[in-house]
Image (cartoon, rainbow, N blue to C red; front, top):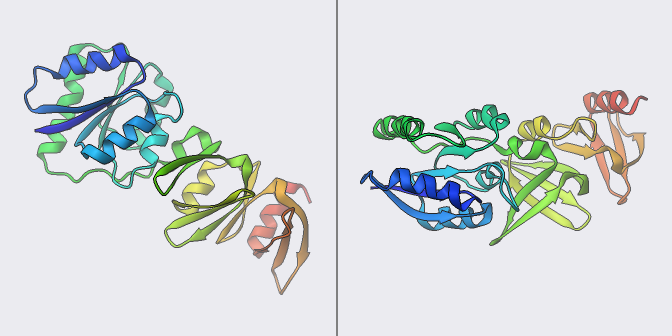
Length: 242
């Protein structure tokens, strides 16, 4: 049996997928969820092979929900908004069904999944972190809770092996993400890579001082000091108009 979860905040849309699947004995619907938090918990519990996922949902989006998963299952997106199609395929989705879709179009998506599934390909582990709301917020796990952090509340980011340390006034959080992915995600008008290990919220800067040869220190509103490389200083001069 192919274990499946349907995640859609519209009950009618979820019931359409359920109806289309009911006559295919290869599929078992393990859960039907109506928001991203509920979907995340169901995926953790049932470990499905495939999920049907809406994009625009309350609380967190479909992309943000996927971002929380270390090993996301295969995904067929179901949404009424065509502007997310490119992002969906960048995330290596099996297919992108634009509502309302026909049984024939639905079956095409199923056939694509079965072709990949029967070939024995491993579950995807796509990096989709940069797709979440154009970097306006970050979703992190804190023990058994999920926390949404607006990027405007971040003082700076620090590289920590395979993780990013997110430093805010209210606390510090870890997120599995590369600095390169983060740099591509956040607004270049609000954040600058000042060092190979640091990315800074420009609004937090109080002053910049020379430190050692070809390096500088940046002082933050919190009183913290961060190193600035020669390349980082050039970036700061450019974005700050110095």
